[in-house]
Amino acid sequence: MPAAKNTICLWYNQDAEDAARFYAQTFPDSAVTAVHRAPGDYPSGREGDVLTVEFTVFGTPCIGLNGGTAFKHSEAFSFQVATDDQAETDRYWDAIVGNGGQESACGWCKDKWGISWQITPRTLTDAMAAGGEEARRAFAAMMTMGRIDVATIDAARRG
Image 1 (spheres, rainbow, N blue to C red):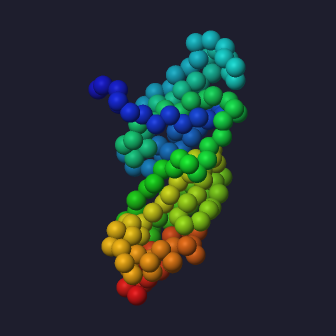
Image 2 (cartoon, one colour):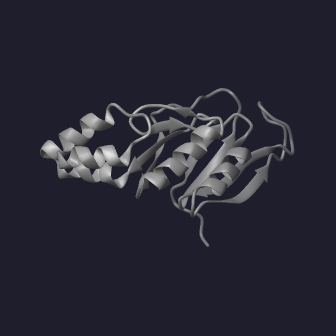
Image 3 (cartoon, one colour):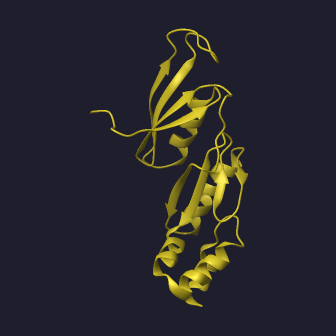
């Protein structure tokens, strides 16, 4: 199978393999596909250390690079996960936050490696796409939330 033309590269301190294995265990259509070791010493590691990890998250190809502490993650990049119901929303939110992550606002959270995730029920994106008063009500409800509450968004959509 040919390599993907476009791959997301995520910078980690020295724990790209741990992160990739967590994603593979947590999300469907996710896997660790390769682990590559450094052929020589480098500024933040030694020969034989895990240098890069190839993995997929929900089918999206990624590479984790163990680059050291020079760069930090920010909310400028996030994975947005569309969920179908509260149970799926809770499952992903709880997995990320419960594994050393942090809660944030409006459906956002961070995993323990600093990667941001938007756990977004489809009902919320559908409300935004509907526009008008429905979108305004759903948006106002979302602005009060950390984890998105599907029932509250649905009630807001109905008015």
